[in-house]
Image (cartoon, rainbow, N blue to C red; front, side, top):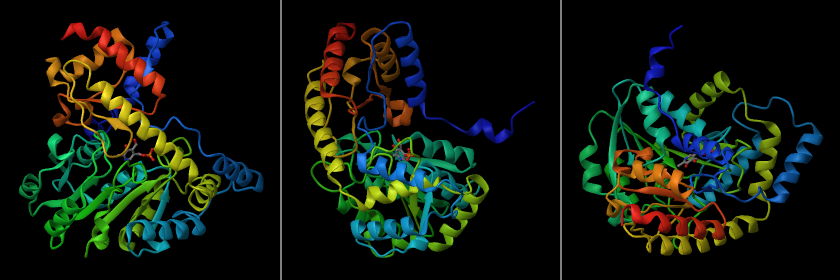
Length: 388
Ligand SMILES: Cc1ncc(COP(=O)(O)O)c(C=O)c1O
């Protein structure tokens, strides 16, 4: 039996492949430090777990409304209005199992074959995977290391064409930790305002930043009408396994996304949504403590990475990834990532797992203890005679 032709165009997320390789090495008795992982190493806050348990005990175990529980959609609308400085309502909110389905549902709803999609390179690999899967045309725009991994705005402007249907933004970003400056967002808004395009603004790391809070493009005139905000609970509340995320978008698109959800998922687990409600409405001190700890690790890790021969790492402004330039090692980033896994027992991701402009970089997640991070850097230094 042959698979459908479209399946030859879909990509994947190689973080899961590296994790599998690392686990196989561990089974053989090798010690591996996991810096490939894209999820916080903190437990879900206790009051959120309790809310989930209480919901199960109370019988929140049945189908719920496809767009999400009304009380959660209301709360999300209030939260997004407050944090982005805009005005959205519950009808703009689609609750889905994680942030990813928002990419899948909105891109499937919007893109025809041949439509052009502008997106950052390097970036979350699922953007490009879905573009190809849907037969749209991938228009990657390189991120610039010297600009804190933001776009060169002239390059972005030149990539726009009458066929551009969607522009994807991600700030704070995976894999670079870059945050798009407010003045750049304003210029991007000016470029897009009079065009018939939509923006997918992936703001899943919106609460994980260190110096300056990230801004949303939706604050600029005319942008709410054109933008899908993707956010969720996975990173902020360390709830990756609960599968709870949402999109905030114009009602005409929300209706279509809900139609896709009826076809694909029916609804998001009801007890999970009750836990999400507790997360948004309850104390936020666990989030603050997590971000404080990430900042300590970021500072220590970046400083330590910069002492490895051939590595040059700038300070990421958000998320929990360091993205050092490793061109000084003269090894390809793929060969280097493989070498570090097998010879140093350090799992990280090759920059090209996020696009061709990720070449020459590695992604290290600091969702691991400070002790393990420092041990990983020591291990890398010990094998650096290979290239130094
Ligand atoms: C940029 C970005 N967007 C979205 C997601 C997906 O989040 P979720 O696990 O909620 O589907 C991730 C997860 O790694 C991410 O890095």
